[in-house]
Image (cartoon, rainbow, N blue to C red; front, top):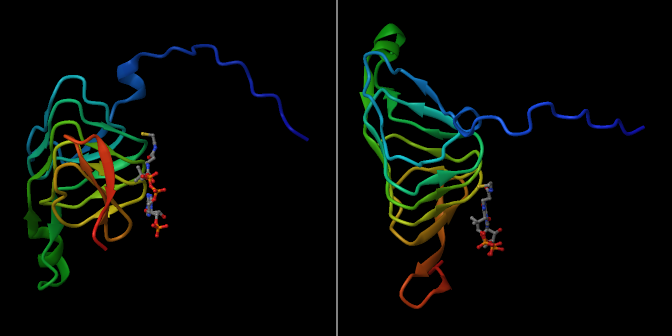
Amino acid sequence: MLKKIPEIEQPFRAYEELFAPCFINYEGGHIPIIAPGVVITGLIDCTGQVTIEKDVFAGHDIMILTGGHDYNKFGMDRRLDGIVKDTTIQEGAWLGTRCIILPGVTVGRHSVVGAGAVVTKDVEQYTIVAGNPARVIKRYNHKLLQWEDAVK
Ligand SMILES: CC(C)(COP(=O)(O)OP(=O)(O)OC[C@H]1O[C@@H](n2cnc3c(N)ncnc32)[C@H](O)[C@@H]1OP(=O)(O)O)[C@@H](O)C(=O)NCCC(=O)NCCS
């Protein structure tokens, strides 16, 4: 039997509270550079420098990573020796729900990352990438205002 959804007492919670990301490795890491008005929910790894430019917005529960480990090492050496790469999300990009942006990646201006994508390489501006690993599925010619299928 369906249950009635309880009435929400505070339907309009503070915008900042709804869209606050979680920062990890903030201490000893880098303070992320986030343009005003950026909307992100999920996790931002501050081990390296994260830069998020203006007009970027994201679906739910995304991850922007900057840190990893050296798999040529073992035991505590592997755990303690970090590999750090800076990650940048350029102006106007839209990051779909639950995508993962791996360390060192730059997501280009006004590009789109599909839901659930694992982005391993830089994303060119005005492109749409999706999948794991993320591949270009479309390009957007902003001058002609039309979508074109990417070369497969
Ligand atoms: C990436 C996205 C914008 C593309 O939308 P679209 O242009 O309508 O894409 P299409 O439906 O034309 O799909 C084109 C191809 O890409 C594939 N594709 C689309 N989105 C995909 C995704 N997220 N992951 C994997 N493949 C995807 C389709 O299966 C299709 O493949 P095919 O040509 O082999 O059939 C959309 O699919 C998406 O992921 N949106 C994010 C939604 C979201 O996160 N919303 C939260 C609120 S911000």
